[in-house]
Length: 117
Length: 113
Image (spheres, rainbow over the protein chains, first blue to last red):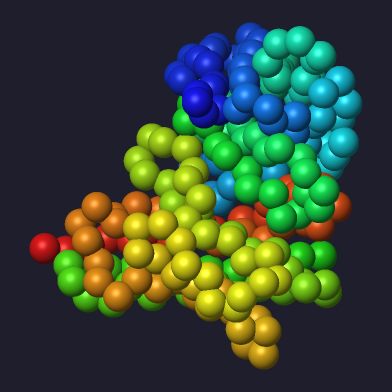
């Protein structure tokens, strides 16, 4: 039973380029969360998605960042026109989404480490 | 708003000694609380969670945590540290409606031989 898959594991971009981070949830999981871990900071929530719907994007920067979770395929976190401050580890987590989301266990992927030159 | 505070960004113990990692929460509703462990360059792994059942929660790798409402605490303990316990530990509270996790700053555990 494969866990949460994220790719690429490492991504290097130059300022102004686009970064696309992919997350495949665990089998049977329909809820996806994205978190960002900046150097010397803790993990911060970015966005919560269900299939084809963004449920909560209160942690997403207002500009340049977007996320989707299509009916088929992985969830994508997209960062346009990257800047050095976007360098961080981005983690995806998935859960089954049973009744009472607050008690669900979130299973984390290994993360994508983005470096912006 | 809910929040979590982890006291001590670095904790160092000797192998075989008691591990105590502190976590205090703030929540206007009964909280759901989690402890995760992160090994270098890896994702987070759930150690244990409290979801309003038993206040003493046992997790993996010999860890346990006790929910104390009067102290708004959810400290993580392990009776005897092992070298393999060296990692970063995160306490988190989840938002009831969405499940999104609000993390503390993390505590790095060092285990000395």
